[in-house]
Image (cartoon, rainbow, N blue to C red):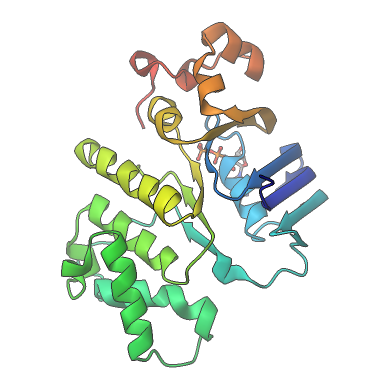
Length: 258
Ligand SMILES: Nc1ncnc2c1ncn2[C@@H]1O[C@H](COP(=O)(O)OP(=O)(O)OP(=O)(O)O)[C@@H](O)[C@H]1O
């Protein structure tokens, strides 16, 4: 079966200042995939995500979303994004869980329109998906990092996206909740048919869950099935990156903790 391409990057290069941070990236993501994006610190992963979201504009090359040039793309409700810092609200932040989730509807209803009952129902439905509906009226700052992370996934899901992009979502999530977090991602991918792109340093875990892995260090050094990636030993990985990548091994013993 031919799958739809949801993200296409062709020879994309980008620099903030003088040095290229992303260089000649060719990358296609197809509908239904759960893709893990890995690479050393400072290798351009977050920058690549920002290029996909139109936050950064490529200096060279082209980005297409859902078959359309990003320059003309306006279906932003199709893409949900959960950023790295999403789960760091302090306890005094004055918003309930429900209010936070409803802000995810802004791209659909426009900034200055009012929320109605239907929007509230959508928000509750999204909270049910992440199993957080009982916290709807709690203050967001009172929740643990892992619970806040689920709320931010609900916020990203409320506009019914086809693609969910997550930038290091397990940072700040208790180790014992990480398994439940991956169970949630599997449900979104396999039952709800949402494509996932997740930036992570946790190679050992991502290769167990993602269908595909992309390894980058400015450019893409590997893109393939997780099973294929798991076969690499340290020597293969070093060759892929052109230098020592101890922290990128899929062997848990060698992982550098974040
Ligand atoms: N706004 C910015 N202005 C200038 N340089 C930046 C900016 N954001 C990132 N950089 C630089 O671009 C390079 C790539 O950064 P980026 O955050 O994309 O990497 P990353 O792979 O996501 O890193 P990490 O794994 O540490 O989060 C780094 O050298 C970083 O210092």
